[in-house]
Amino acid sequence: MAGNFSKWGETTNLGDKEARVVLMVSRNKDNRNIEGFKDRRKAFLTTRSFEELKDTFKDFCLKGVDLERCRLYMSNNTRDMAKVKKELVKHLINNDDFNLCSIDSKIAAIAATKECAKEKKWFFDFDINSEELLTEFCKDIYMIDKDLKLTITKTPNGYAVGTNRGFDTRVLMDKWGKEEVSLKRDDMLLMCTATKINDLSWSFRKCKSFDISYDDVLTELEFTK
Image (cartoon, rainbow, N blue to C red; front, side, top):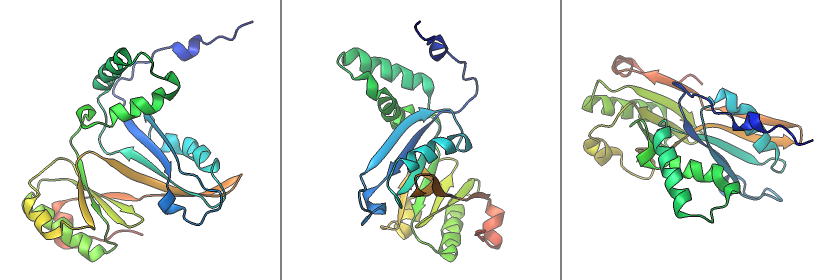
């Protein structure tokens, strides 16, 4: 008797659910000298929250070799599902030999394009591990536009400084624009890192985030470790 596959064909009204691109990756640069390591990545579009993705990320991590280090990224901006669907249909029509087995990664690639972004939030990749310089950087932003809302995320090499919208960055980047500070207008934000211990266990570290305001940086910004 054939299995009942109808439940997999059901459509669901997403309502107000936000869709984001997810990238799980194990990079060469994070795994030098790990015996048997091979670069791996998995990308897809989802409405699941970061917390709901944890088990999927664990499965990805445990498929690696012992001591392999992995990362999970999510798109900083939500994606416009209607635009993604339209572009996917166009791609399928124009590529009748498309391999449907790779459709998840293709959908993710389409969704990750700037044309499919639903929001216009930015973040600065601030690769300077200094709370003092981070505070100075945030003050410089608020000197330009005090109505911005900032979100700080701790990363392995420093911080990601998120803004709720764009602004004139010319003065800011004249001062800070160097290898350690770069502007990401629509990019993937690091959410967590993990290391495989053995086939049954892993260590997991979420990147901590907090919101700050203009009043916060007028006093003193302190990141809670």
